[in-house]
Image (spheres, rainbow, N blue to C red):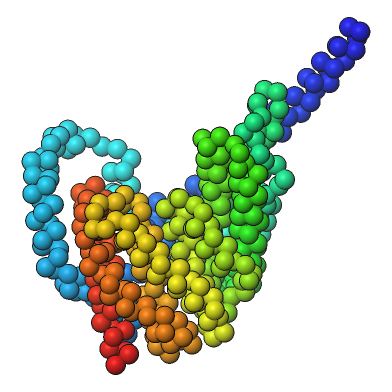
Length: 432
């Protein structure tokens, strides 16, 4: 009997050692992924907005303008800006000098990043990596990227129903968390690569079009698989405690956000290559991205979904129904957020999807010659909806985004407001 108990104990110890070895190797892979991701870090990127594919501004023909034109475009909102600045100055009077002496004496990593950016050192280093370090890029694409896609692939234990499991008695919860972390690191690593290529050498996507198309197709498939796994687990956990359900949902969303972030970046690469207009996409991709926004409460996930949907909506000719679904979703999303605010303050994070939706609309419907403009934008009365949204959007931005605390976001919001005025006038003239 004792021998039998001893045998069971030895077998359990052996299994635990194997599990520890697997988890240990997984952790090492995570560390390696972080190191590779740092090679393609965003320190050398001159503008975060450029790397996220957002608009700078729009002229009356619906095309992007230069930074100088963008500044002049903001003059349309000078009356609003002066009022906003005055009100914000009154609210923040006396706060600007607090702790100023202490701040002047401090020096941190952010200061060094700013110096490097001003001197162009970081940017030059990244450019060297892309141009002079061709062998590094080739090795990464040929050898690392296939491994990354293997690590991105969800397994049957990646999002297991683990809230009732004790990590001590059942290791499935630990394995599930480890696999989810691996997926997340793999997507993050690949996303960094795409962002740097987009910023420094956009022509790379055109030269390597087949690879970019293959990545796009694989990412679309992964988004669908991960989204379905998430839905299955949410349904299975309907009776679970709310806190446990939220924790598992957050784990799913973090991986899903990484996947959609890569999909969005890859779509921008296809656009830079002049191929996005006819890019292949699973029939369920549009519905899937819209569904994710409808079930998730994460503003950052919404932004990435909207960014990807905005590029999918630009495909033509022959994608009118997809455009209708996306355009209607964007307009309704803007209306719903502004209606919930009713001119009052809301979380600035929840305004970011609205800004991204507006920027997407400007791109999608920038020309009446597009085959979807008349049946969707005109017949759907999108112009009327945008006219009604304009004053509400202005009010909500003014009270919700503190220029001192969130300067970059406020600048984007103000730019979207100036562009909204210009876009409404432009589409009205176009229709006359």
